Length: 343
Image: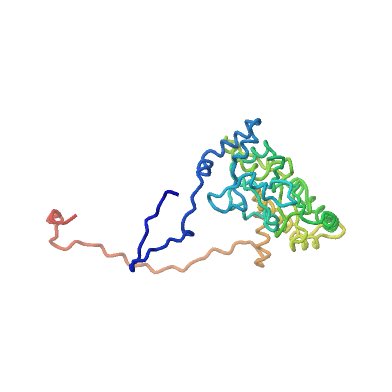
C-alpha cells in the first residue's frame, strides 16, 4: 500500500495511534465495477447460452452471510461452503435485503445456519429461470414448494410427517373448503420455524416477487390486473404452532356442523397473515377490514358499532373585539429617513 497517513501528535508530544478498526475497509475495484455492470452480466447469461458458464463465475450476490454494504458472494464461494447434506443453491427473490432477512421463510435456514442468496434485482428471477444451475448444482427458490432438508433422519422425518398429516387432516380439509379458490392447496409444512403459517408458490408458478414485478409492469402500461389475476398459492401450516393447534380443536368433529363466525374469522385472519408473510397482497381488502372490525369488536367488548351522538358543546361567551392599532399623533411615515439605517 503506497498510501501514507499523516501522523497526529497529542499535547504531550506522543504519536496518536489510529485504530485499524475505525478504518473503513477498502472496496475491491471489481465490486465497484460490478455494481455498475452486474445487470449486464446477468443479461449475458440469459442471452449467451454458449458462454453462460463462464459469465456465471463473474456474478456476485448478497447473501444471509454477507452483511456489509460492499460484501458480496460468488456462486463458487457459496458452493464451496455448502453444508455436507445440502444439494441445492438456495435463493430468495424479493424487494429489499431488510425485507428478505426478516421473512418467516428464513427461519428454518437461520436455525440450520444455511446460507441463502438474496435476489433483489428485477432481472434475477429471469436469470434463475433460464440458467437453472451452476456447475451442476441446481437453484432452489425457498418461497416455492419442494424445499427439503436432509440434515435429519429420513425415516424419522417421513413417519413424523405422516402423523402430522393424519392429525391435521380435518383442519386442512375444512380450510380448503372455506377458502375455496383463494388457495390451491392446504398442506402441513415441513420447513416452518416460528410462524403459524405461510403462503408459498407452486414449483412452476410465479413467486410473490415475480407477481409484484408483473403487476408493476401491467400498471406501467395502463393495465390494472383484476382480482381474478391474483395468484393462488399453497397455504403451509405449522403443526407445532399454538394458533394452528387451537384452530384444529375449534373445528367440529363431525365435519358437517358449521363452526361459529369467530372460528371462521380466525381461519381467514390466519390466511391473511400467511399471505402477507409470503409476500403476496391481501386478496380482498374490504373483506379483510370487515373481519378485523369483528375481531376488534369482540376483543374490546363493544356491543354495538352504532355511532355515539354528536357532541353539543355549550355556547361560549362572546370575546371582546381586539382594539384597533392606531398610529401616534403627529407620526408620518414620510418623515422616517431609512437612509441612515444599516440594512
